[in-house]
Amino acid sequence: MKHSYLLASLALLALPAVAQNPALNARIAQLAQAEETKVIAWRRDFHQHPELGNEEKRTAGIVAAHLKKLGLEVQTGIGRTGVVGILKGGKPGPVVALRADMDALPVTEATGLAFASTVKTTYLGQPVGVMHACGHDSHVAMLMGAAEVLSQVKKELSGTVKFIFQPAEEGSLPGVVGGAKLMIQEGVLDNPKVDAIFGLHINAQTEAGSLSYRPGGEMASADRFTIKVIGKGAHGARPWNSVDPVVTAAQIIMGLQTIVSRQVNLTDDAAVVTVGTLKAGVRYNVIPDQVELTGTIRAFDKKTQEQIWAAVRRTAKGIAESAGATVEVGFEAYVPVTYNDPPLAARMLPTLQAVAGGATNVREVKVNTWAEDFALYQEKVPGLFVFVGGMRKGVDPATTADHHTPGFTLDESGFTLGVKTLATLAADYLAAPK
Ligand SMILES: [Zn+2]
Ligand SMILES: [Zn+2]
Image (cartoon, rainbow, N blue to C red; front, top):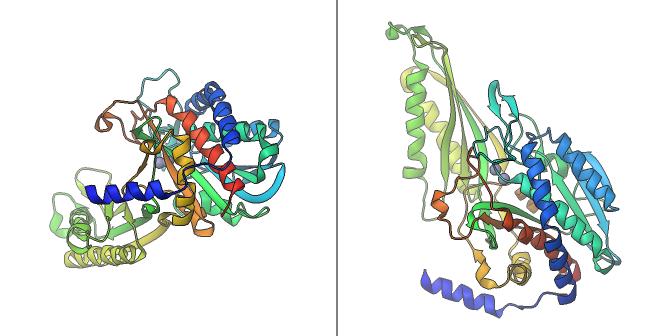
């Protein structure tokens, strides 16, 4: 490990260490710093008024008004609530896109922050709070900041910047097309045609002031699966009259645990099978007719993904048959692997190092089993997705609340680097796209 780290460090030294336009980049850094108070205020406002995927109407309204005020050409209602802003530079050149996601999650906030969300909703029939528990509030605020920065230096930009504010990154309700997929279907990468795309995610487990990324496969593919176990109900006191779908579902859940641990070659790449929901019965002494469970599959290559799909189907079917029950198994491919185009990643590394204040603040990380629908843009055009530190310096990441949990918080001092990263990636790419 140490040796490969040394080799990687030497390889980094061999890359050109200068950004394309030091004067412009210094100006962008200065303007980004000046945005800090506004970006934090925007983020707190979005945090207090979170909206679930495909319902980001208030958020989209604020974004569109901001972009219009900056003099951008603005399109709204792309992919339901998505907003696109187009900034034409003073000189001709390519088109670069910057993307932020806008949606919150059905999580009940328990941070105790002064600007904590008290919004409540019903999600899939269950009462729950709404919370920006993944930090997308900060993404919207940082991209609004980057738009303001770049609009102030537009005369010096060689090309066009497309700002994409996307709904529903966390996924839409089952069977509903949304997020990046719908925006792409509605032409977000065309007119003008996008040549490259950049995006970022705040990370509550890495220090503010740092960036991290991985060339090639960075985050996993994610699929949703549903298994319906159909048995035969009976009085709970007379189970011999039933084909008990509860016990059968429990066996299936345990069987699924052996797919990754016993059947996938873990020396190739990581993989995950997780059951997240289990719906069974209404009363303690009634054996129901059927049970439904849903879960997620994560993988880093197509072959493993297909192998796991087949194994889930086989395991569920085999166990159900042994109990005299039947199953219906369904899969929904949600997103492919988040794949950072290696030449683009290498090309933009000096930019990342420059904005972060040196190579030591940019870490190349291991694969991450999260997934991102940014991957769908990367299937169409070369893209780079970067993690921005959002944890207070000196804190042990093991003690901070994870993304998607009620205690999730961010260190707002990390946002300025996010603004700078987005704006400088765009400016540098336009200055020298190849
Ligand atoms: Zn998330
Ligand atoms: Zn997220």
